[in-house]
Amino acid sequence: MSFKDVVDRFALVSSLEQEEVSRWVFVILDCINYFESMLKGKKLTESESKRLSHACAVYAYYKYSLYNFSDNSSKFKAGDIEITKAENLTDKAHAMWQQEKSEISYIVDFDDFAFMRA
Image (cartoon, rainbow, N blue to C red):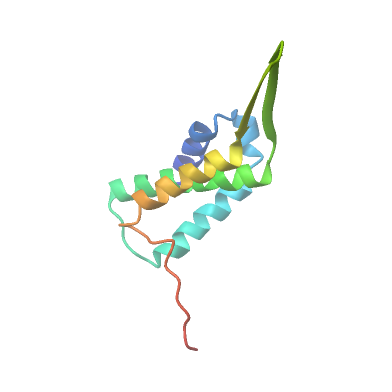
């Protein structure tokens, strides 16, 4: 996976400015390392590598949303009618990650869990 490719895709997914993205480089690097550890030395085609880079960027965005939790709710009242809009960044990022995870399951399975005997 290319670090630059993951960072560029993270910027696209998150809609953050480059200055803000640079603050999250360590989280992105941790996500890249996590993805590479899950591959266990598996050789990827170029298209699989790009697909994994995008999924890694979405995973990094999900991690960003967990660390940068904010409630984006707003209220509007007109007479007796009150409308409340709540948009939770973490829920949105989690849904994106679940979708990406299912789309890359043919490359790497993040849901694989087993007890190992030492």
